[in-house]
Image (cartoon, rainbow, N blue to C red; front, side, top):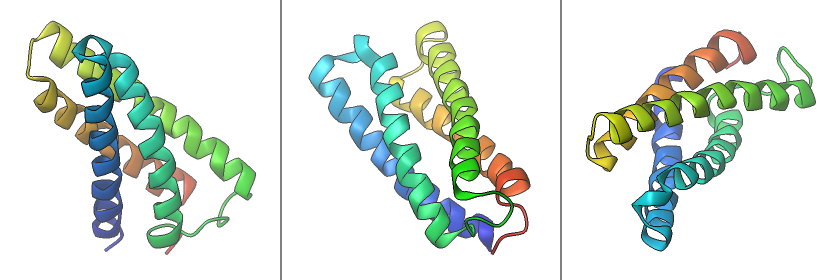
Amino acid sequence: MKVVRYFVVGGASATVDFMLFAVLLFIFGKAAWFVAALASFIVATAFNYLLSIRLVFSTGVRFTKRQEIILVFLVSLVGLALNQAALWLLYQIAGWNIWIAKCTATATAFLWNFTARNSFIFRGSK
């Protein structure tokens, strides 16, 4: 059940990510894809954390609130690196459509984030 709730939270977060990414691409053009992806991912990650601790995970179970936020930030940095690497590889190198590449990159980061948060940061919650 937890993975279903996280999937809903992830879907809402992906919507924020995609919408901001689209707006930034519209404003700055496809040449700015790296910065657009960086900014949209950071905003979506903050949104995801807030929803996750309300709907999916119990906050403060294993770590203090401060430690938890730092750990989520570190896990998200890895997710960001995976997201950016997948976009670079699929869009820049392989020449995929930017939206297909973005979907694949988002799915990669989603799987990493859920696994790391569920297995380490929030293990034993809800």
